[in-house]
Image (tube, rainbow, N blue to C red):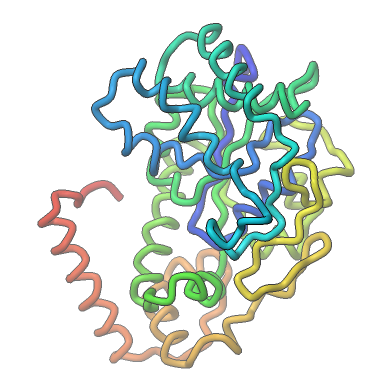
Length: 330
């Protein structure tokens, strides 16, 4: 068991639009957890931005960079992001969080891990989530499955939960924000994310790396949350079943402009009306192996033309990564 809450890191991972936000908001009000309500991007953005910096320099920048999500201002929202009008952190006294961050970093000791741990502890204290019952802290940033080896090295007691969703529904949602994405781009990203998740579970064990299907979360909420509770070692609580963000009711972050009360199964199978047959066929051909492994039915007949398109795209991506020196790993 971890020696302290600061060491008990929990990361929610997965491809964007796979239900990572939903899981985070279900855990948000649990009395045994500190749940950071916005993405820190600690490995995807902060670590990259501060590459080559000393620990002292990183610590000096950490407060500024890790607090970025708390500047949502509903009155000026269009200058930030039109997708999430319910994010209002006006009542979060972030000046106090910054001050407590510095104190926790001194107490824990300056290190790569403790920069993020101190931010979690500071937010937990100021928001009232840190108390005698608190066991773990929770952070969610999509694609953090790319950095799991680093996560487990920095936090030996860490646990990760990865969400997987039908790639056709994932694509029908994600492309509304990223219109430049083709089915090939989606297939490549979903395949990489899913293969990494399975490799991590095989390497680190199901006790440290849990993979959940989005569909199970919305269709069988009670049993799926029981699995999550057992994985995290937390008790059942009625607050688990009503999504909140920073303690406030959460209506979802649907790319289709919908707002939900509680957990809705409405997004499941939406691709049938949102995608063309050609788009669905490409995803079916490219991802059929892992789709079947996770119980997603193949809707279209096998197409050699779709297979050829997918192979050509994979080769182009592979060659591009080789030229950039990024090829390697799973």
